[in-house]
Image 1 (cartoon, rainbow over the protein chains, first blue to last red):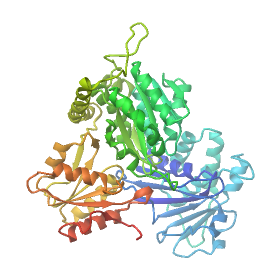
Image 2 (cartoon, chains in turn blue, green):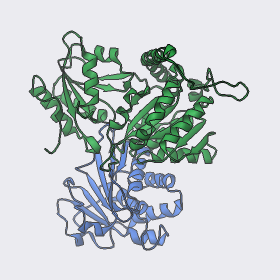
Image 3 (cartoon, each protein chain N blue to C red):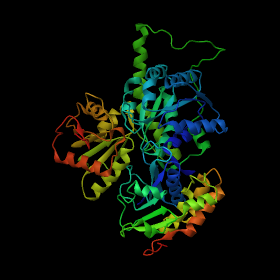
Image 4 (cartoon, each protein chain N blue to C red):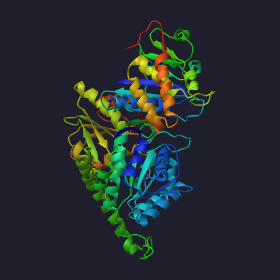
Length: 190
Length: 384
């Protein structure tokens, strides 16, 4: 079973991202489960969302404490939340940032990647410039570095999940897939 | 068609497939998405139903009761404080023998404010004359809405189907959404025996003197007793048509089990994982899933637990001054059985505290370690 945790701020689309990731894996024949952190969310406040992907039905129904991979939709969360909490060794930390992965000084036990999802989301007018909605972009980068889901499955799931500007969102997913930057020490899984 | 949907929307799709005619609703977290989606279905012409907005849950149930008396298939959803506010009118639904279906998303009752899962809200309505069915997965939620109308319209009692806050209500997972034509064949339109119609005036809810009162209550109890078998029949028929059979309880890996976990709702799924792990180690541990709480399925429970040494009941609820509610009901059901199992009554996960596989392992270890429970209530993972 693969477990993924997504950190974001209320309004960035972390919960939708967890669902789209689940739906993409489901389209490729996997069993899935996704859920938000069971809290009382507010716009701008730190939130988390989770996805489980497996080759058999997901029956376990507790929160995820030891994720295989982590996505961070807002780099300012790195100062507020321990985004590596419980992260398994060798797991990916994918950060929405224009900075290179090395700049975060994260432990070499993890693989680090960054993608400038803000720039991409603003380019395709996804959300306001001051608070772009970056979820569809970061999923493209996630597909590329982990190989857990294909770009095609993610774009199909994005089209289904996003009622507004589906093609712009798909374009953002593809651009992030192409432009993700990984820590020099690490290669893609595919 | 299989889709990844949340538990709340599994309710909404079930209501749409059941061709419900009247919905009354008042929003409350964590249920609101159920009726939000239904209001969209009504607005978009995807469900030909009257959607009535009212000012409180008490009025919700009153509106649904009125619709049902008029002969409509009626639905609502609520949770926690909303259900508590409905309490009085719940009796008018069951006493009126109205086949209403309601989804209750289990949530703790305040104060302090807590929106997370706990079964105390629904279990506190134990004696209102509503059939209660607890769901483990989003698929079961959708399937139960369809079955609930068939059960309710057969025995003429309302059905409350229950799902856990967030752990099911807000969790997305694959659900097979059945074909409308197949559901139409399984669940034909509601044909009320009596209904309010202007052309044929009659009275409902008149005064009932002691001369007739007990007979009405006796008939309600008989209908409740009948509901066990009807639920089994409907679940079996559902299995024949849709490939997913249901019963009032489910035995999971109970062959030769010395210890049996008894639980309900979403904790069942996590418990299955633990039972599989322990079985792989050669430990004789099984699981009994309680789908039905009212009527209490005495016969099925006694049959399932005959010969078992120890039973660990996992309750996510409490009756203050007594204990876990499933545990106390189970003890009553086992009374008088030859060599009944020893019941270990655990309380865990109140107000949404997470229940993990490690929690279930600890429950099994306690049950293995002691011959009988050391306390009247075994509190798990509580800070004392």
